[in-house]
Length: 337
Image: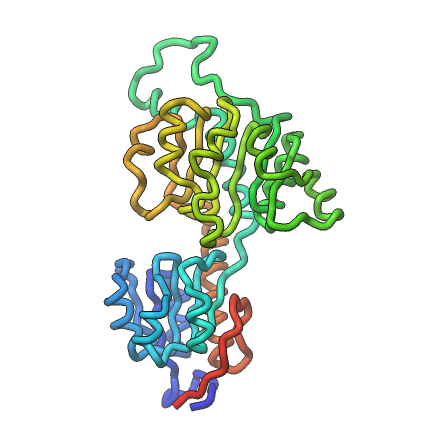
């Protein structure tokens, strides 16, 4: 059938909301779609996800739902996948395009994520969680001149790898707010006006790793960026340096990082994302010089609401004929029964 405004009961598209969302967003979707929800928030195994999507035309996903060729083959009615995330490495974009399936994301979290990136940098450099655990354990008995003495943030050199909107937001906070010397490495150099606004200077990756006091990762995950920071890259860093990852798990070789931290080849790390999350490498859990957070860089109530709302808006706009608001691919044309 041809796309039709989804308010007509006889032709209401069927959608799956694969994870829990704000109840009012779910009710808005129910006003225009036949909705199967998962408010229990159970992560669906691939076979279960395919089973639930077998009769659906749309789905609202998070990063935990993998959309690949096998799932698409099992779900021939599927037409749109609206991701409640800015990243979409859970999408096999090529397979979706070939199957004629639209993908969308929610690029509404730049400033919130930049705030968190800088917060994680400061917590890592100044050893905040290590100091809090010490205090809570009742170990604080007296002041000492070197007690939890960390690294300077103000006036130090920050190296950012991945200079999209979030990276630029962090650069502005660093340069204008903390007087940091900001260098960056990216697939392509920024336009001069953007560099000037960020007060950031482009350098090669090796120079960045060798000279930065703090290295912060904001690059997208792709096969080419898998383990972009591994043992060789960590060996280039200063022994006093910190590493912060708010990008995606898999960009850092977590096992190699644990070795570098344990052997004090670098001073500390702050991680909001992990390889194979929500599992975390056990060697990282055993270390005191790493700040660990459960993928919460975008976690403010207004931003998470904006993400859920935009994912819903993408579904509604697609089915009422306006087209997706924030597409991430251009799917091949397809015929609908």
